[in-house]
Length: 157
Image (cartoon, rainbow, N blue to C red; front, side, top):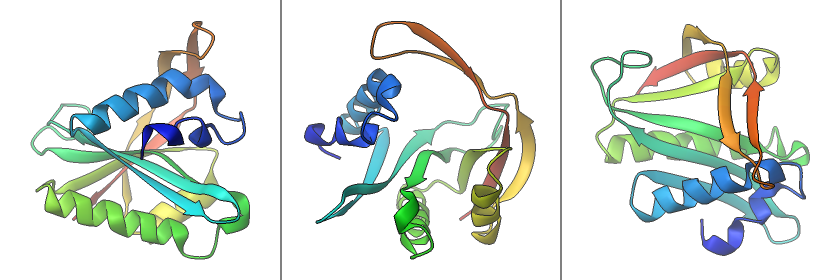
């Protein structure tokens, strides 16, 4: 991801509220903590994205192992079912292996059955429930609190 991609990953304003979060992802990419994978179509612009963040062991997700945390995994609707998500997931696995990180971990909204099926088909298994509460500062400098109950899933690579 390059800095010019930042407005584009707001997906035509749908995710504008995360503008400052995305800026932080970009800064983390510059210092080597995060890898942002962006899928772009010549005719349609950005059609997929995923953020991969290196994490140290912690009691919530992985008390013993460092891991790669997957977030903002998205493929635009017209491009689903064509293998793009599978390719992005394979790239995440390769990056984890290259970095010596034995685990991939992600949260999947409990309401998103299609994504849950995709992740399970990719070899992920559930290991905890997450209440999904988090806070951030939006693009208008307001503190927002969101709740999206999720399943935490992991896969050894």
